Image (cartoon, rainbow, N blue to C red; front, side):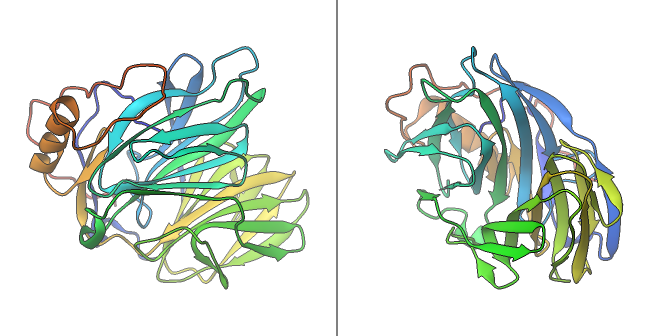
Length: 321
């Protein structure tokens, strides 16, 4: 999914100096953003209070939306560089096309993982016809400097490993949880997992104390380390934890996001992750006037134009805490 903000701001993210080294409970409220005519997302990262969680740099939660009589998701061709996109659905389908020629329909609990590397473009849309409901999350993972110009590629994994406990099924989307490892390619120590909790269930999820973590609520009512987390909100948990207490008030769906704190500072703007403002300016120019990002074939519509870059230079980022 694209960042469709027509007044996108340059922001500096990453760096261990902004990581909370001990366990905390910071509840992050979303920013509501329109995507096209019928989709509104709740943007949790980047957030005024928190820019990244490990290498996770962007988190949108959308739905459940009734799109039975609507076009549903319609995101025209747009570019990416320096990141991976993770598409994750609880309901509905998303048709992915990209400039490599990939054409895949992503369904609930299937991993759509696009590694942009040096440059790629793609589109996302609800198929025709499509299911009545659409509910999911779109996430970005920043690539470390050693891999940020890797050759672009797309992976679609229908079968993912799970970790189970009474009343809990954790599907490992990316990285490793307990002893289960996703087949998706990861470039940093990371974890992403979908947590399905039955009403009344209580569980303790094993964590890596060297990772920082956050939990996104997708549906239902649940408590994370004693904190109620409602759908569309995210609880930042800091580092230093070996386990995470969970309790379901009703059937609930959560996403666990974590990873080793991202050491490098990155510059993020629109749909690009670079290291300098010049990286971003060159990428914008290449999208508007060059062929670096390739072309998406088969989408019924024009590519997205890039917004204007901010006229003022990028300012140093202040500390989060």
